[in-house]
Amino acid sequence: MRDLALGRMKTGSMNKSEAEYATILEAQKNAGFIKWYRFEGIKLRLADNTFYTPDFVLMNDSNIIECHEVKGFWRDDAKVKIKIAAEMYPFKFLAVLKQAKKRGGGWKSEEF
Image (tube, rainbow, N blue to C red; front, side):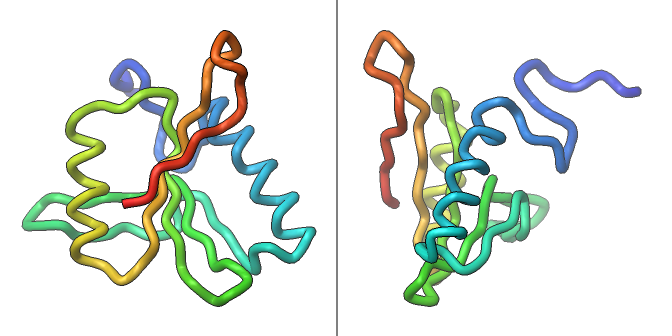
């Protein structure tokens, strides 16, 4: 197995926060709030040799495609990529930030 950069998971593998968020999406799907979702379901070209793969892509109950990025914290390059993608593509882009337990836990969202 090749070495992976610290904090990075093998493509197609969810980290703990992503897996937790997937259970939330599954509950929303079962409740009818979203119609479909997929982990790393699309890869968007931003420039030559530059791509952005949202953690989750989903279709909400209004048939709007949303791209959700799950974060514990932001790295500068990740925030730049989601902002560029939001300017280029007709999808709703949302960052979902897992809040520390000392801050009350839960999730905070930011739309781009």
